[in-house]
Amino acid sequence: MLTRLSSSVTNTLGILLLFSPLIASAGKVASVPDGNTVVFLNADEQITVRVAYIDAPEKGQAFSAPSRQSLTKLCLGKDAVYKMVRSNDSLPAVAVVTCDGVDVGRAQLERGMAWVDIKQKAQSDLIALEAGARQVRRGLWADEKPVPPWEFRRPLRRTKASLASRSDEAICFVDRRGEYRVINGARRYGC
Figure: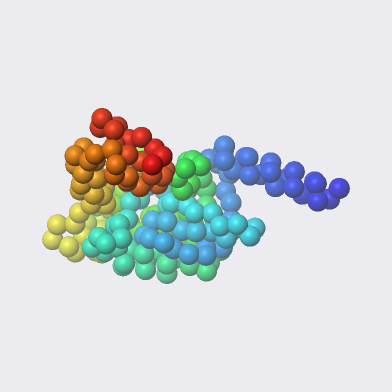
């Protein structure tokens, strides 16, 4: 009886977490894959969460390692709270993350380790934090011409698209959804 009850409560909490951006959850940060992603260990399951409103340098991009190190110092091994902004089964959840009472998105912007994400509607105070770091040339802003992550990712997409448009149907490509071929300029999944 108690097992069924606790399972029911857990399921109900999981459903509420998915559908309500106002619910906060807590867990210990198990790893930090990059400058804007943390992995929580919560009740023996790992939950990957992307920090809301920021976009950090990609792996292989200038300042990628310092950005990841900054977020690691803020969160790794610490108890943290995250409040969902958006949840999607195919992508990491997006949440405002607080480690030891510090909003890590704001901290990454103040330290010059991330940009304000142009795809999300960020508050003007976050834009001001980025502008402050930019003005004093802190973090990635010390670079002569820092390249935003969305522009860094763009050439990779163009290369794939140009290869795909010239490809024959025998070539298979791979993305996060799986293997695909390009037939008449459109992706057809399943090779």
